[in-house]
Length: 124
View 1 (tube, one colour):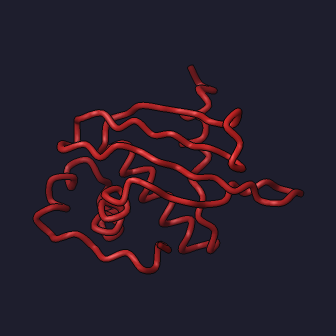
View 2: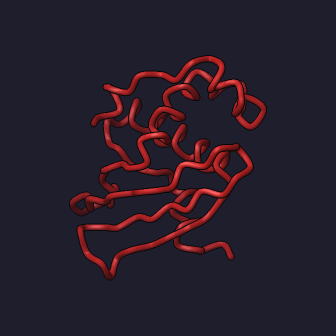
């Protein structure tokens, strides 16, 4: 499924996450929650000066914004390139919003640099 085929969730479902989302990003929220509920995403990590690296991200769907979501990302179908991160579901949905903004701009399904820093534990 592509990002363009996503159907937005209801306003009632989106309202639960509204306090955790910046006002200027709320138009993406119903679509980000819809993507979140799919619990899987295929994309490509953009690498400057090289070919993009395909990845598959999977995660559990939490019931509440403060519940933890465990996200796993596997690059290039290689089990040795498998990474995992846990965060509050509202935080993960904000990363999905960033992903959608990037997709709208560049037509590439890829997480933000900030997400990868968290995934690879660069700032810890």
